[in-house]
Length: 563
Image 1: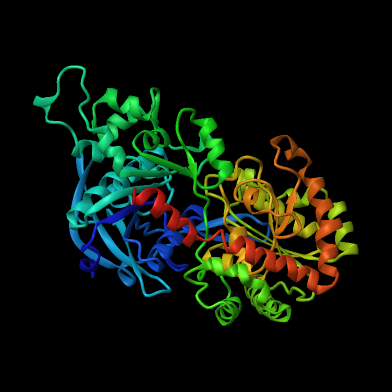
Image 2 (image 1 turned 120 degrees about the horizontal axis):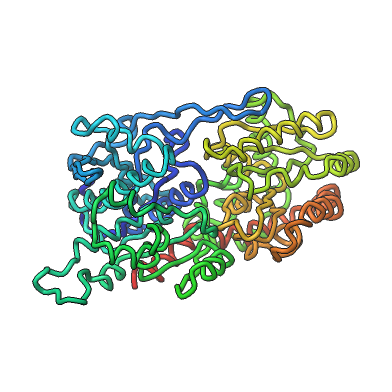
């Protein structure tokens, strides 16, 4: 099966996580979902991509929430043999002065337009390896910094070697975040000058040649969140891939900074939204960081009722989502009927998962993302009296979901706090928290909510794509002006802003949120249906038509891959 993908040069897309399907737990959230949508759009557009990731046999984790709102983590194991094809080639990487063997599993994502895209999932669970090494590809983002470094050796170095062993000709390497930056060191070794040709003081590696092969997408607008490894740990774990002076010049003087290494070994660098690229340029002065704003895969995130509606009125929208600018030709009643079906599906899922019964006649505010402090999931609950007063006059319902990283105690406490607020507001606001957030719940919530809420602390939102998913279903966003919403918000047309774009206004966001909800959003929902549907059409025709992964991948192809 792999042979069909070896006939032409390919772009190797490296990502620590990729959301393939909901039942395959190789993703923890937004980064993996973006990677999955990247591969899906590549299949639709017949872009010659091959994705490389880890098999993550034990998954991220399956979330259970107890009666007090405490998150309980369970292993989320899967058997790659059930859905992927084992590949015959094996390669070795050196870890702690021993060979660790790596093989791959082939998963294929089928596009909606008869295209196909291969994904190579790297696996060290082999008889040739020690027990501790067999677990290196088990846990997504598990373990300590030593475990993470070993995983990144497998991903970056092992991934490059395995692609070559499999006979795949790679013409370009795309690093999705800094986790795979060690692939640059493997390329430096490949393109090292013969020792006899190197004079004292001259470079030992053809760095310009390596850079010409590489593209780097940076997501993290927070320097503290970037992967860093002490050089003594690097030396002990992986030895000397390249000489120490070269490594420090490329990756940082004090420790190995994976983001800086990727920056220095990539010809082109992009951020995932205009605002985030601007923040990245401030963080790393002297580097050119362009912006290719993220998008979401049209067919994956559009509810079947809306997909059928678009196909009936705008044939070809799946391949060219820009056609959605013509949404005004769809009758209002048809838009509302599709939304009602999506909302009914969400309400049924909520009943199944939580035994909470919501009223289809009342608006639903949806909020779902990784539970961590800067996402501020508790902003809506800053003043429970004010929130209750708004709900008394203009009733609404709230649906929440999201996982906290197992080591993020603050995130876990946020989940507990949200459940405490649910208990405090019982009888005033109907609320539900859906456990084990994944692709299926994300699709249901972004399609079935009436308003999509996003409240990050500026400027810490890299992009955010949940609101883009909502837009494909005519769900407008009520969001802080950060990430993609800086570009996507047309006030009162595609949704609404919470506060302004100034970082200084973070502290006033709760008051701004309540005011916008009370004075603008809920009154519009309670008014003539045509006025609300006009905003729904604005979200579809101006946001979904642009913020999709087809547009994103066409830009990558023209501006990065084909240069």
